[in-house]
Length: 355
Image 1 (cartoon, rainbow, N blue to C red):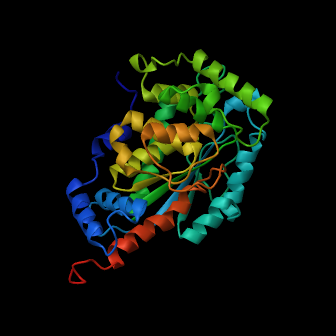
Image 2: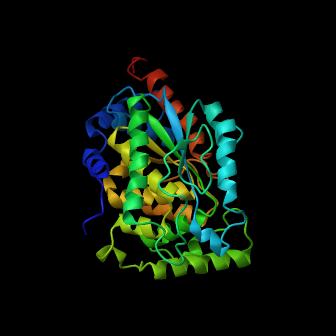
Image 3: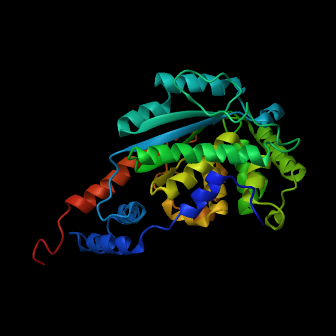
């Protein structure tokens, strides 16, 4: 089925090419010849081989890296799905600019740039936050479509444009971050729609709601899917953009764009938790060739996260019981990626030992 699509989105999709297999083969050969039993460094070996293919060089680097924190509000909060009000989204954007949030702390430690984007909050955009607002929050997806397809595409293209800018500045990897009260609800809805897993199985406690509210949240997600005509046969009538518009969020759409834009410009995409994984699912549905560019950082406490990663056949490297968002788990993968590069560049080979 033909997708609702913008010029920038269409051009970006056309530019996505799978990582260079020849380079990956050469790097794998060197990794196998390092002074260790073959495969004994596990995921680190896989990481550096894939980074080489993504960057199309036998000497990959992560000298510049960033986390993009997309911020947006959700009309479905009206249904009582969150323990916090939408006003917290605006307050947290201010916290990001002051460097006081978890993502600021972790990104400073990892040497990663933090780019905060207001793509759809109800708040006034604070100084220091990039204002790319498509609209002031989505509509209530339990009562109808959260966005129009045009709004969804515009949000996707915001993410693409920012990824392009970072690539032009020499960025090698982008971590996906988010902030938006209520956004575990559309994330679970998107994950249910794409993976086909049961809604109740995918619905977590988000910011800390109790079990009764969790069950009510699952019922709201079921209602949103029904109201918006999304069932297990949706692919015969709808496109991924349609589904994103009906039950998604503006910050999720922005992260879809970041994922596609990063792949089109040779950057690794580091997936954070359940919101980032929902964006990764949509990006994959739009263009399956983005998959080799994705790295799963950690396994969130939110059940939809595991379902999304399983569907994408991605294995998280870290198990830290995290469920904060912001990209806080994703940036923790950067040192492991850098360690894999150091392994490639600094370990001796058996040939160098004369064996």
